[in-house]
Length: 525
Image (cartoon, rainbow, N blue to C red; front, side, top):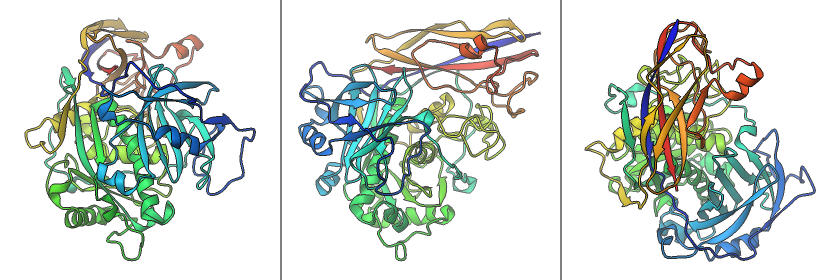
């Protein structure tokens, strides 16, 4: 018996750069708290199995960040440096720039809401914000995994939880009701053998995001507080889209006009995504004007998720996006739900091989899947409870095809100085004995000498037994893992091999079959 591995390769640009000089002053505005659990000032919505408790000097931090330059001027201005805590007891320094999550006109209306990019001197990338709700941070680290800093409880702007994404605990019940009648021209998808995703250009889309009265009430009842919560969410969503696709979304200047404070008189049927998706298209077109935004969405509560496929830039359809949750806050809402639904709007289908709402052409991930366009936690058997914050290679290709299509011309394009890496070789197209672990390696060159992230993923979509079994002759046997710094992936992973453990979601075949894999290389200046 034998198995054959065939290789797909892909590469992409990262839309960030680190400057050569920095303003270094008193850059630590936090301290470890002596209390593991401070007195709760409101609902404790962030639940983590393990976390570090810190106290922030929010006024001092605001003062330091008042001197931050715009990310648009990073080539000629000097950034401010601040120190941020990590969950493992360490900390790191970050260069900070004010970003474009908010349009300049919206910034002038809400000067108390600030969103920033933070580039770690150790190579991490973070999205941070300071709002009336307090301080928030999402740190995307190749070496440690994703980390978060969030208020300990609602209304508490002094005490914070610092935790790893993997330690977040959630009672996840929401699902994405993906209805084909709302899709725009569903196309047959055939993955390419070699693709350069992203053209080393940053694409900026004008984002109109409405809020139901219920969403606004959850966040404190005022337009400003709802707008602040939306900025926190979209800042984090942008972090993933910028890293994976060089796409960013800027909340429009008059977005406050579509944030509602009265659930009895707003134009939405909160809790009914099938109604809300049409109501949102009508409301945003009427209030904002079709020519004044590129993609629209509405945040609610208890409504689940629903979106049109490939509707960005499409007049009459581009506001067909709905996301709602009983707790519309934190990583599950931001990444599992909002990033997922906007992924549909940018042309990406579901990736789970399980039967619930499966899209056969892109069902490349075993079980519920674990990437953004999967159903992690809501489609048994589940790989894990929540999505990892990256897109599968097949999703990257779908979105790339969508934004590069002839009818997709609404975005603003900015050239980047970065150059894409080149995959020069792999060790694929080989035959190995059945029941034998194996490794795949990519050889890559980068003219800029930047750090790179690698992600090997299986590319077989035939419906198959899940969790995978060794006797399957088709379909996915290996899960996607978060991108890391190694060009080599072991199947299964080395830790389980060393321990003599057979992982549920990494199963080596015992029969003759051909397996296809793709490596995606992310450029990380």
